[in-house]
Image (cartoon, rainbow, N blue to C red; front, side):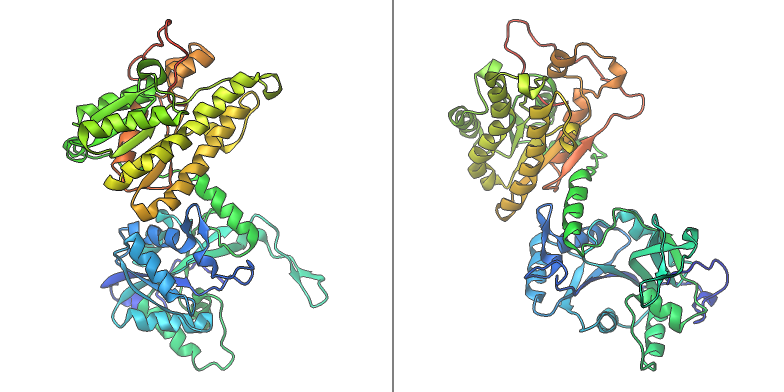
Length: 501
């Protein structure tokens, strides 16, 4: 279906003059009904990673600076649900949510009518490809300056065979020249309109994608192919739901830092932050940093304030103290956690209970107690996981599983609390120089560890962002080590309760 010609103008003559589109429109095709998934709702409304699939997809185009407008073509009978998702998410670029056609071809014609006349870049994208990247969108739009039709594809990792009616092989094409098509597919408006105009005269016309229409009815038009990605999967079958959910879990969000430090003061001055586990490591550094920008910070821990995170009474007392002092709670941060190494079969019940209580029951308790306070300010709950959440490791069975549980808790609460305007996120730091890590592993080369201050800065960026339901990786830059020694644990105090690293 796809081709990549690199020379010559297309058959419509558009390349004869410089292409000057008035705008770039993303058309999100959401006409599927979920039949192959066995659902009672269209698959694009199914929730993955705490949000409907179509919301994830729209968010990519909303964030892409190359996109000026978004039009949604929704399955019949479900336009109000799609419109509700758009309104709730606050997507400003979505100009229309309308019903698609009965067939794929009809839907494209409806989309072209909705776009209107004039020279426009048009990107058609499957709503159920929620993992499309900003890079793919950007390269599609950029390619339209040179080509009038653009496809997205990836090399085929499998050998493709051709069979006859008896399911016997008739041909095995050379794999090196084969690609697996994805979306978006991008066009200069005049090209795709002309292709469909010519197709109307063909009584046997039927196509499953728009590049195929251009290839067949404008055969002299080069169709540029840009690289897609393995993650840009189409949610079609039940297994795709699980794959997409896992890919979202593994894909960490990127949080930009403010260019002007004064912006942090504007965001944090007068805000109230409660940090559970705020005496050492990441929690201590975050406390100091937030205070520097004018926030009122209340660090609590077992060793300094006698606060046990797994005890509802202790948690409520800490929150009430902060609220009575300032009249508000904007951010609740939970860096508290303990790391106990050892084979599960050899671990005593007291140790197991302590790990489960502090690492999981504690965050759950804090979340429950924080809800009424954060609901008033539309604030944020920030949790911490570890790189071990993606795969449990020997000697870390309880630690790894509790950290994985916090990721799921983050995504679940982000969904539950969205109606309250509360954001919930989770920071995933690389191995970090903290007292907890020193206690578990002893002294390690500085250049192999992330500085606690670096994680604290990233945490601050998450707090003032609009992210929710995200896992944010914090990684050490090449050659980077701790900016300063970690705060040492004091010998006369109990084992430190601090952030994971």
